[in-house]
Image (tube, rainbow over all chains, first blue to last red; front, side, top):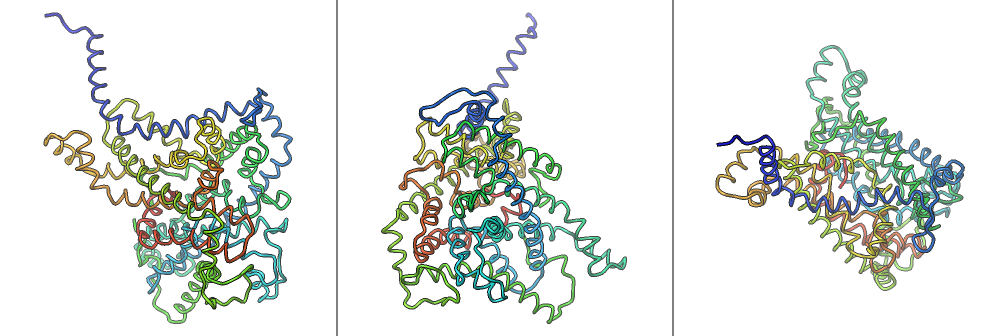
Length: 305
Length: 284
């Protein structure tokens, strides 16, 4: 009997492999189709449209890299980038400080602690529309508006908040902070509770107490949690949109126009879908760079948390 | 890991003065988070209220449902509510089932392209979804899918995050179960549905809650893919109410309608939400 040739063996191995593979594909087919329609195709079309001038209706013209050249001198875009950086720089330190402070506050075996934690989480389960409905009223410029009344109690005169060029962005920061701190408190708590109590006992034996206990045990062991929170929160902050869209529409005088809002505006207010696609690529690149710089702290799958 | 009541950090002795100060601080923070919702509820039940002014009476007299009647009469709020429930339920069910299937395949499967597809999925997970919204609109408008439930539900019918979450859950089940099922003559679908899936129900419940809340609260994408009022979800519709500048009473009635469903889910499913965050730090 003739020996099986190598090519025949390869073919039969191929067939065996194929037969083993086939039953698995139905399990991932829906995921794959959704991925193609809602991610892969848009991803490709983003690059295709970035070299076109089109309103999706009548005009459609090839312009090459013109959009990317335009970006260099687009003052509104530069303002939007500065606003995004400004928002992030105000928001992240405040968020980290407030959420950590509250986490430390509620990380105690006191009665009713679970209820307090749940109450702090309440703003986070709320949609941005509800948030905006409430805070548009609370930040009313009227002297008897809720926030103006409250600051009046400590002698601060009424402010114009969302309709003031200098106060609109800090107001958005405040609202975002109010919404998010409970969520990050939960992550801090998980980090705090993962620290073994033996370490505190050992440090005490070595004579550490009070602040030094936190300085040499808590803070070093919370560093991974802190890094994780900063990465997640920064990527979230760069994408802030809903509250700005509803509350200020990017104003007053573009004071709250962020990069995402600018992309939205170019596409849906001005019908410049080509330029908006090019801006989306820019925005992708920005997020990617920020994420890469910070990514050595990120771990997927089996987390420390 | 769940967030437990006790803490390793607090080893201090009970001190009544200190404890009182802590309770006062905690109550102060609680007032800032709960206060606005109480005022929202109170104003929504107040007659003829154009502005919220302080000092405020928390219990209105008389208590009225007029604002809610006006809201339902003047806007499509009832339709938005229906749309939101419909979209969120289908999205959640679909997303959880497909994640369970794909998670199973990536945990147990041995098929061509497994690693390539897995890495591709990982890539999507890292990509910021706001950056893709304009291109998504472009594609959907070419497919004629703007203002359809297909567009609203589509991207939610699969979850990369969920696939990863469930893959981890399946990996923690010993292979003996698969072997036993195979020996008993079960095919892949039977061993998935009857033997392995029942063991990952807690992970699926966590995912379901995160997906439901995420979908219910999503704003940017559903706003972009709907232009007709009758196709909007509640969150998007309420966004238009907020921008239209009506009465405070009407606004707060809208806020209450938008808030109550998420509150209900939160109260019933709090455990799963907290676990989901502790597990991953990533929402829906």
